[in-house]
Length: 145
Image (cartoon, rainbow, N blue to C red; front, side, top):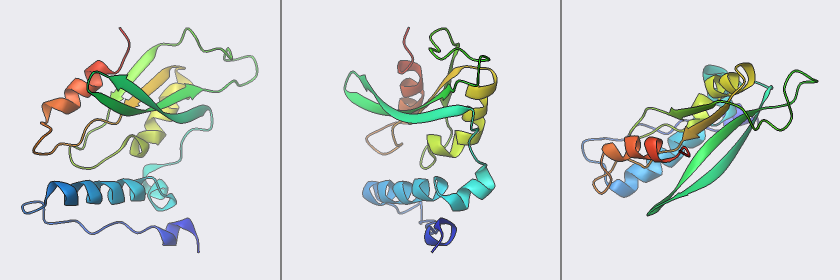
């Protein structure tokens, strides 16, 4: 069975009555779909000129996953060390669902074609114990100063 048929988008829950635990489960399922081959047909394939990896950033009171995009060496056109690249910080939308993976097409192209180091922040889930402002704080706190 191909990945396109194996991964199905989860049904949208009743957001007016959803519990925090149900929201977390729904978010994981939706993000799984958005990272699948089925969604890639809509969202686009990442640029082959960029290497992509997940990293964790340790911050006071929390660890945040970030998706890091770096240009790969293409002959002599890009230096292999990539130590002097500009930094682009991307905080994706979607307070309830959404993930850095859904932005692979855009962020990988920025990394490969600028070239730049692109860091996409997987901000905290908006929930009763986590306000909307936390997403902005996470985006602000991740890059080194």
